[in-house]
Amino acid sequence: MSKPAEKPPSKAVYVKSYGCQMNVYDSQRMADVMGAEGYREVATPEEADLILLNTCHIRERAAEKVYSELGRIRIIKDEARANGRKVMVGVTGCVAQAEGEEIVRRTKTVDLVVGPQSYHRLPGLVARAGVAPGVVDTEFPVEDKFKVLPAASEARTRARGLSAFVTVQEGCDKFCTFCVVPYTRGAEVSRPIAQILAEVEKLAAAGVREVTLLGQNVNAYHGMAPDGSEWTLARLLHRLAEVPGIARLRHTTSHPREMSDDLVAAHRDLASLMPSLHLPVQSGSTAVLKRMNRKHTRDDYLRLVDRIRQARPDIALTSDFIVGFPGESDADFADTMDLVRQVGFAAAYSFTYSARPGTPGAAMDGHVAEALQTERLHALQALVTAQQQAFQESLVGRTVDVLFEKAGRKPGQVVGRSPYLSPVQVIGPSSVIGSIVPVRITGAKTNSLDGVLAADDHMMAVHAAE
Ligand code: SAM
Ligand code: SF4
Image 1 (spheres, protein in one colour):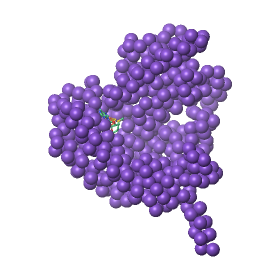
Image 2 (cartoon, rainbow, N blue to C red):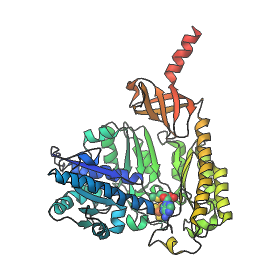
Image 3 (tube, rainbow, N blue to C red):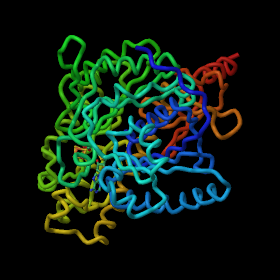
Image 4 (cartoon, rainbow, N blue to C red):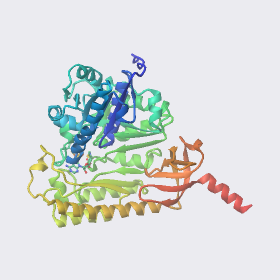
């Protein structure tokens, strides 16, 4: 049955996304679901009739940021009211799931609180909160939200650019002892193949060239195919590589324990699967990994890196680290630094341990003093930044394919991404936007690369020879 056409926009929604890429995807789907109700998406809260904060609960500071943002939003809401305009405010995502009723108790600014599994019900919840503020829905409903959610309109997809996220798996059954995700996002569920394929085909029809498949443990994906069989992530990637228009595929986040042979082989065999892989290790110490319940050792990880690099020698590996997990000794931390030196990462995120209420880690002995955690974090970040800079510099002089996405900040500049995910800027015509074009890298900064279009390079060489 075809979905009814969107109502013409009469109201505006602003969605602010915190945390991971899965939240970015969810925020877009919230804008889509409200779009079907006649809400256009706006870029600032001041323009909005409905403000949604799609929150992250992974670390304590992430939740505190939300409460301070609510303080700013209260001013916007009060000013709008003084001008005779009603603004509604919703907290969604993982803070909503974890804190529920507490949010509406703590601040009168919030009209509705919606967990990550209930956002397909937003229109009904907004309507209810319009009559009686303080609506809370943090259920894990039995219906499949992806079946109910409307697809993004073609115009909205185009406005979001050439690269799109598609969540293929949600939740987590791993229960790492530091992590709230299994509690806020629920059990691991893989979306069926046909649903994902339809979504990717629709994105491709609207001009999307690059798709990143998302999941908390995306490489544990096992989705139902139309014939009733179960497909792995590798098989899904092979199928998506056939979708006309999709030139680049990526996936994140992968768990070291779930890196199956067929996925490693896909990184060798599939030209459209980009050579970058986010593979969080968290610690280089086997003893700490055990307390974290990561279910892999330091050696397992190092062996896995070798296997992946044998399959795809140029792969850019990135990772996540937590320093100062309970019981982490100087020797444990030295193991982490040593692992980083052995692997050589293209980039990494690192955090000091944040005890999350209700997780087993929060009750563990061996608290590491904050000053020591910070000292270790700085040492790790200095090492990782040096590796990132070295990786970027290793590309200077090489020609890499760049998917050009948009105009740059400087006149005549266009910006795209390398296969390794770094932004690349060149001086060139805007006609390259949407295409994958070879670029010779001429300079490296820690977070971006400068280059020249290889075609311009060739012309200059011809002129010089004449
Ligand atoms: N599922 C992914 C995995 O298994 O690695 C990552 C999920 S989590 C959203 C992203 C990162 O946040 C983790 O890899 C970890 O480094 C960090 N993180 C999670 N809980 C944390 C905590 N309690 N304190 C500090 N960092 C944390
Ligand atoms: Fe959290 Fe561990 Fe699950 Fe990743 S695998 S989401 S870190 S519990």
